[in-house]
Length: 244
Image (tube, rainbow, N blue to C red; front, side):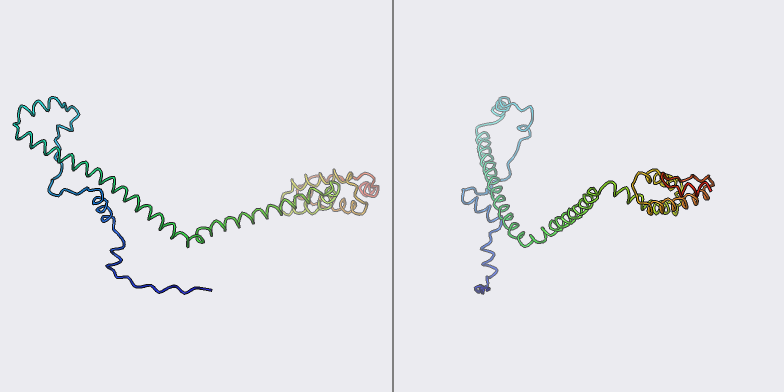
């Protein structure tokens, strides 16, 4: 149940401007609080190039100043130096307070950014959630492939050999269809070598032998080679057929 918000009194532009201090106002308030006033009557600090030189010698400078200046000029120079020192010290303190004001402003900015980032959480996390979803799908696919691999490894080696021999003629025919006759001939010989030791029953074994002979004849016709005689141990009918 939503609670109606309390009515707000419209704020005049002047009142809003007074309530939100500007950075310059903050710096001015800091100067007023610490008693640092900008001396507008005092001009910029006059720097003597000789004082900033790398070979400046204080004793020589003072001796020359005493020789070339009277009391009035020395007092005037002293007052000028005191004013310059005060101006520089005031500017140094003002710089410290300006940096302090910038730190407060940066803190407020971070606070506002943190507050404004709350509605953007959904937009921020959507790509992350999508990546997690894709990763989960890949893991599931990998799990299915692993399950299929484990299922294959659980098969009996003898059953796998029988299945390989049974599907052998189809593999040889597919190789011939792709014009891979040399590979087909090698595959055919491997099937023949393992046919006697696989323990296949007579009808299945005879069918495979007959189909292999047909495939061998086709390969011989294409390659113009002599046909190898397929002899299976214990199969007298095939021997009689070849001798006749």
